Length: 429
Image 1 (cartoon, rainbow, N blue to C red):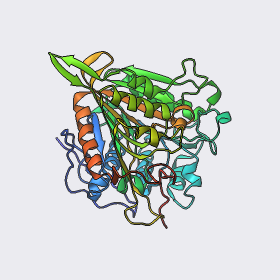
Image 2 (image 1 turned 60 degrees about the horizontal axis):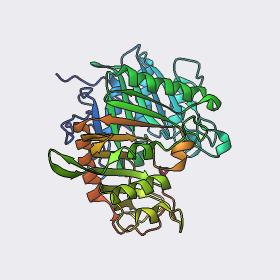
Image 3 (image 1 turned 60 degrees about the vertical axis):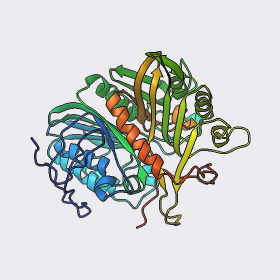
Image 4 (image 1 turned 180 degrees about the horizontal axis):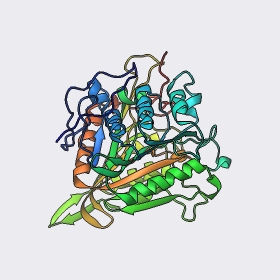
């Protein structure tokens, strides 16, 4: 039974009502903005920046629906890198007015990168900035993540997750996404989100991490992870001083067996990566090694880095290396607008993983495969052990790969990181 969405935006920037539900390949229903709310269902949601407005805003619509569903006495917590969306802000303001506790932690650049945007002002006027209260908007320090060691240099709160304590028919809901709340995130960038429902352990782990972000006690912070089948959540930064230092992603890839026999049939494991930035040399080298060991390794990326001895672009293009497609396309030739890019940060493994055949596992979140994402930034990464979810991500990967420009002709300054690709472009007034 479907219900009328409680939230109705009074804000003049409200988007056109979505007339019909969008359906994912996996059969998951997306939310309807302004007509009826979606059932709160665990699983993935993808936007399509080359599609209709409804397809572009699929993740945003889902979040608007959840904000609208949140009842008095419940709570919403979110940690977001950039939040420049007045309609979503108004939905939060309205939720606060009906008795929902709202707590937000943003990167300081949310304000300094776009001082003309009214979103932050709307939120602070309604929620305040006192982080000891039940509702607030907090900022990490200037030029620094909330939990990164300042001696390591500049860092950011790069998180993109939302926590809902109660929705219609669901509790302890986590939305881990790669999407910021900005115009370019919807209309220019390919993003994903994963919804976890009714899992108190994972919700509590995210909520505890959120509390650490609020506390900004970087000196006592330790990299951590929590497992509750079929999920595992990892929380960064993972500094070199960590008791068991290492690269989380290479550790995952170390568990891959490339060639194996199952029921008398020779098989090879498939590894797929959709990544905004891939500049961690250890990860690039491990992906090359897996390909040479017999895995199928397929990568769609927006930016690497280039250098004669340490560049990931050169490493990935080693003879016999992975299949590569770059998606970093300035389609309108205007440097003042955002390029079309893949902005997701997910890894898919299909085959033999951790000694077990027939596995379909995915990792997604805010975590790019860069040095700062590992050791400096506030980031979250979510592992999902699910055949259905994995296959939905494969469908998305195939669509992103097919749309990628310049594709295999990726010997460009943008793909090689010679010209930097910003995560967000400030909208032109």
